[in-house]
Length: 186
Image (cartoon, rainbow, N blue to C red; front, side, top):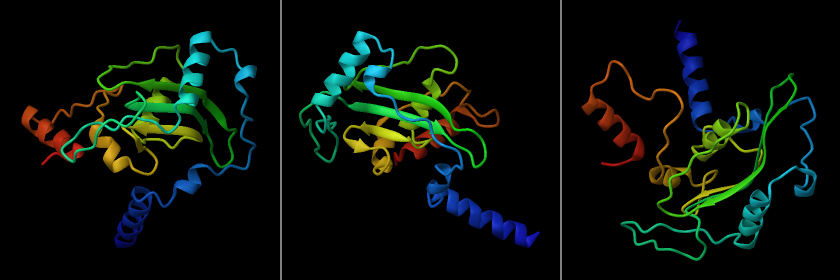
């Protein structure tokens, strides 16, 4: 019993510290090839948004805060550029969930993705909250790269998942305290 507890604790620490990120990308099967923009059946407005983001690369918005950061060029408080996600397993076939999605959101905008089941909506939002790691692409929130600066980025966004985020055994006050602590608010 003690051995199980020790091994479980070590495994939990490895998973939570992102040391095992390389294992998520490992597979014995070939990952589907990326297709160019011209090969995909994209609407004109989708192409225009990706082109707009191509032109404003590196110029995201820094939100004003108590540390005095201010707006720096560009107009995107949230920037997702050429995001791609392929789910892999050790022996299973890789699954292409999202291919080349790009969008930029201005400060204060409310945003939703609409689409049929399996279109990649949940995968896209999970990448914004770093629940999953993108296979390729750029994701920034207020100029913070979600992959390398998530501790700062997560304090600036709110996300309501499709499943109930309320715990039956907690009071309203306990819920508020819990979510404030997650956001890092004293």
